[in-house]
Length: 152
DNA sequence: GCCAACGTTGGC
DNA sequence: GCCAACGTTGGC
Image 1: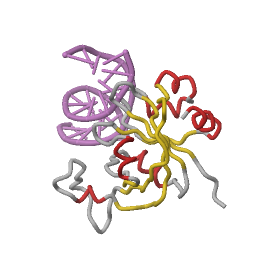
Image 2: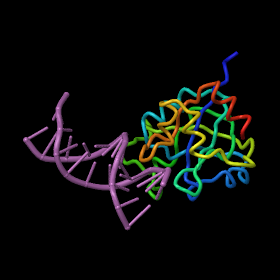
Image 3: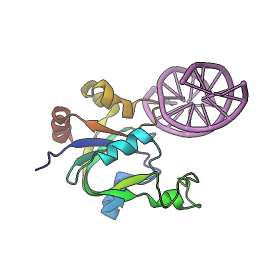
């Protein structure tokens, strides 16, 4: 039995929001173009829970929960010339970018605000919510995750 | 709109 | 392989 892990992933609600995910049910978490974030996705397992953080909006914070349901999927947007995530360096015989599939679990009644997260999170976890940081995925410690689950 | 803090790029 | 310049992010 693989231990279930927790993650935090961020998205701008203008690009993809918790409401869109609620409506879609499942989605590919594609468009990740940061090696560290990609490598974190490669460490995910099916069943892992993911906190959904809305960035670059008012107010920023955790707005819901999702679950990883599929792994190691080649990110189709890297080959799509019309996509803003198109990567001319990536070749189909050796793709650079991959992603996971997630499903909607719940939307928070009250978002967990950035000031709250700054108190709860370790330095590593804070990286993802830190101003200017392009890292959009981080693992969340089990104890912190339990607190977040109660607040969500 | 400002600008600090990042990751990436490219000249050497 | 260094590192300055550059572009992007995102809270404020």
